[in-house]
Length: 227
Image (cartoon, rainbow, N blue to C red):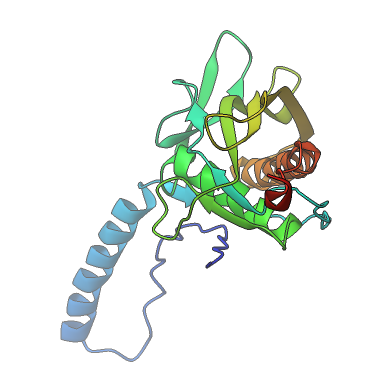
């Protein structure tokens, strides 16, 4: 299984340098035209969005107890409609959303969350195989993780927060009752969008800690030798 690790990325507009001395008039005119073109292109580029992506944040390794699932599937998370957009929601005060005028997600937020949660979980459970629903590399899972996210921004108090519901269950129609938990995770304050995305990545790592413990607490698989 290939583990993907993502990093923050940001677009930096080009900056035109100063003209050099000792040039002929013709060269200066040509250079001036090229300089104006470069500045025009830089202006167009500078008006575009700055792209951000979540990243895997390492955590404590969790040993799997006997009978714990060793193949885990992360279902694609459900994202609240207000969050499910290209531009990054920077604040949610309960009645109003604040949306970044320049910051955008590099790809679908649901896909990023699923991929990064899987990477976080694989790091914490090195003896388990973890994959995302509809991944090119997959197998029959022994456990399923489902996530619904309702807040993924700063909260009314100004702290970066992740709110939602996570469900952890055994795979199969005869599985035991799933473990459903309401999740409210709060991090630090963020001074800008990059700081907020870093803190959100940390909160997804904390969510992975919770999911890892829930997987270890699932009823053990029946022993085939006793079947």
